Length: 281
Image: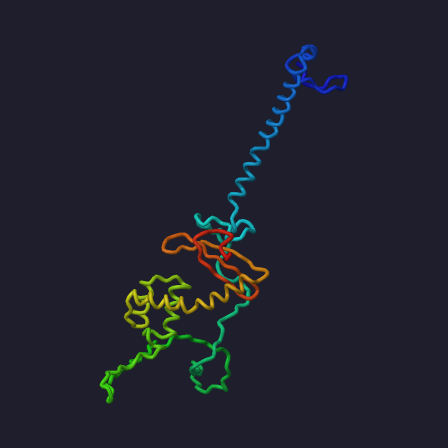
């Protein structure tokens, strides 16, 4: 049947039967056929748009913080980020002024003068300083070991045996600086207790058991509790705060390291759930 516009200006006839047959069709049947035609036309339009929609959705799935402006916290913690290949050599570009090392306050200064000239004359003019070469070295670590010799004596009057007590500031056996160092290694850097023990033995030459290492870390944690609670109070009372999270593994268990940053403080929290109510109390 005809599928093009008629000569009288009417729209093209697209049914596989004549106009006369259509006119003889009951009205209810005509209405149903027209509904089916409209639905068919809509499905055909969707079919043509489906590949483009699939490509758009696939592009959204493949979008990460490295390929868009999305924050790193939006990336899936179960997929490792892929590094894009570098377009050149590492380091500053040629011609870029170098910053150099920061000169620290010296504990020792040694002047170095040029050797005699190879011409054999021997005499040199007045030397002038042209460069300062800085060398940083770790001094030999000598631990401060204090022995508190506790004495006992009997009372002359009643005969009771009296014993001296360990000074309260030294009852643990490990000083505050050493405690802070072990707490830093075990907390901020997530160093295992075994590696902390090895560090104390090989670098500090201190024999420590794993139980002693854990007790030191526990004391460091307890010491910062008041400061942590004060920071938490300031962070939660701030009118504006930025919140973000990142995966954090604790004993091979996936947890989340949260941070709430305000104008004055930054609050960190390790939480087992990735929930917006983490900081709510």
